[in-house]
Length: 171
Image 1 (cartoon, rainbow, N blue to C red):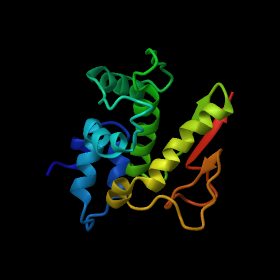
Image 2: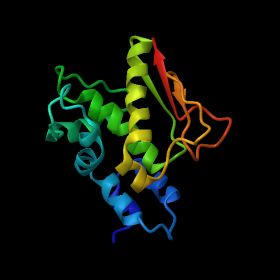
Image 3: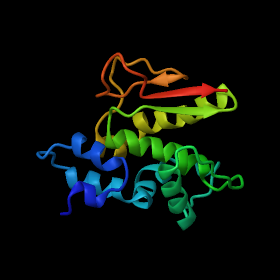
């Protein structure tokens, strides 16, 4: 098995190396999902997609190129027509992948309206609580006594007293 840094590129490598202990029995499975965004999509995101709302499609090669560009240039903007999985792939999946790699991650969903940002957060929250395969592989994300709101939430493992794991912000 290759080392974590050689398998994963970018900021996932260090975070994942800290998040997964040597004795973790599903270490290789976690690595495999986090190293392959298309496999992650097919395993975790697509089965939870409402077929009445969206076509059952997979990300195209331009999604992977756009993802690499957005990770390298955090201020970049990606423009594509409606229905091209921009929110599903670049926002929802990316947020879920990041929290799977490191429970200390923080992310803001920013939209022109607070309700738009809250909608994105709600989809992520739904995956983190209802996606049984995701919970099986990466563990629970929501503590039993956690109070998740429309505007923010913290996942299990995040240091207390820090910025929320996820927050929704309207501008």
